[in-house]
Every structure is written in structure tokens, then in C-alpha cells.
Image: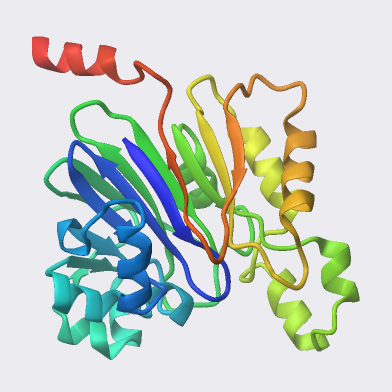
Length: 271
């Protein structure tokens, strides 16, 4: 498995996961021209993508999904509420997935988890290689750590998790009070502190890489987000790597630990 964050933040989000030549995009929050450029910068042809999972209908996650599907033949997956909220998805014959549903593609299984955010029917996504069982969890736009969010993040080999804002910077920002309240609410976005605590809670020996995502340009910065999480992980058994996604560039590829999944694959073949 390989994972790239093509870009993450309020101006657009997209994560690419690859397993055995099968490729799935989680969100397409850029126009098709920008998506194509970012994909080709890592040697990936847009038409080689099998499916795109849309986590919710906010434009920074959905902007290029329907047009990308039409142009490059992607299968689209989204919750019924997201499809209802974005007419272009209905026109693109999007496949409806409820939280708890799993969809098996060529080499990847996609499982949807409910997430708390101020959208119609937001989901987070776990993508697992069918053969080896290695998996990646993508969880952004989360107001608080619900039981479903915790279940999504637990046991991931690769974890992309929102670390949106520093609480003090948010309070001192020029955002009007109602915007500050919305961001800090239980249906808004995770702070650095909340994200770092969740990562600490779900650490396990096979967690190979954590990528902090959806950072606020106004109320956060890369060094601050990285520092808060790194400090929180001290003294744990985390031996993986910690990175921060960028808004205007691609980061990755990130891969599971070497040999991870080999035993599961051998056992599966023995059966």
C-alpha cells in the first residue's frame, strides 16, 4: 500500500491510496485541471483511478468529483445524504454507502464511518488491501472524537487525521465570534490538542505513519501542529513517522511497515 496527500486544507483536499495497482481517491476538492497536475506530478494518470470516495459535500472536498468521474471514468461513492445535497453526484450515478457499509473494489475494500461535522451525512474512510489486510484511515473535518471516529482510527497502519487549529490562536484570530464557535464546536474541526490525544490513544506497534491534515492557514502552522503531536507521543510505543500535509503541494508516498501483512497473506493462501 502507498498513500499520498495531494493537498489538504480549506482550499482543497484529496488523498490517493494505492494497493497492487488499484487506486482510490478520498475526496476531490480541486478542479480537474489541478487534480490532474498533482496526480501527474507523482506519475499517476487520472484515468487509472478506480474510484473516488466523497466524504461530504463541502466544496473543498467535492469540487472535482463529479467532473473527474465524467472525464476519467471513476466510480463515485458517498453517503445518501451527501448525494442528496450535491445534485452533480446524482447526475454522475454515485453509489450510496451508509456508515458501516463496506464496498470491495479490485484490490481494496472501502469502509465508511460516521463523523461529526456540520454537513449532511459526513463520513471518514478506512481503505484495506484485500490480500494483505494492511489499511489506511482518512479522517478529516471532525468536530469531536466520537466512538465512530475512534473506531476508524484504531488499528490503522497509515493514519491521515485532522489537526486543524491551535485553540489559543483561534480565540485571538480575526474570525467573528460565530465562526470561532463553529470551528470549535462538536461539529466543527479538531484542534491540535484533541488530535494529538486521539493519536496517542490509538498508537499500536504497526502504526507506521501519521499525517496531520486540514491545517488552518489562519489559526495554525506546520511546526506548531507537529510539535504538539510529537510531544504527546513521547513515552508511547509509537515508532513510526509523523508528517504534516500541505495545502499547495503533494506529500508522500507513505507505506506500512516492511513485511506488514505478509503473514496474513500467507495464511490466506494456505486456506
